[in-house]
Image (tube, rainbow, N blue to C red):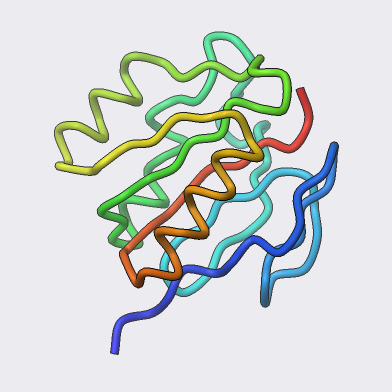
Length: 123
C-alpha cells in the first residue's frame, strides 16, 4: 500500500498543523511524511522565490502532484527554473494562496494521490 500524504488540519497566519507532524510555520509535505521547511537551507527568499533545490526532496519522495503556496499575501514567488524542473519530471503543479493551496493539497491527499507541497504560512 502506498504511503498517504499527511493532511493539513489547520492554517492561520504564521501557524500550520499537520496530522502526525505537529505545528510549525512553513512545511514541506510528501507521501508518507514531511518536515518543517527551513528557507535558509537553500537561501530561499520571497523573491525570486521557490527554487528547484526546494523541490528536490519532494521529487525524491515520488510526488506526481505538487502544490506550491504563495503565502497569505501572495508575496512568495516561484522561479521559472523550479517550474521547469517540475514540468521536466512530469509533475502536475498547483500554485495558489496558502489557504487555497492547503485546501487543494488536502483534497488531492485524501483522494490518495502522490501529492506533495511547500507551504508558507505568512506573507
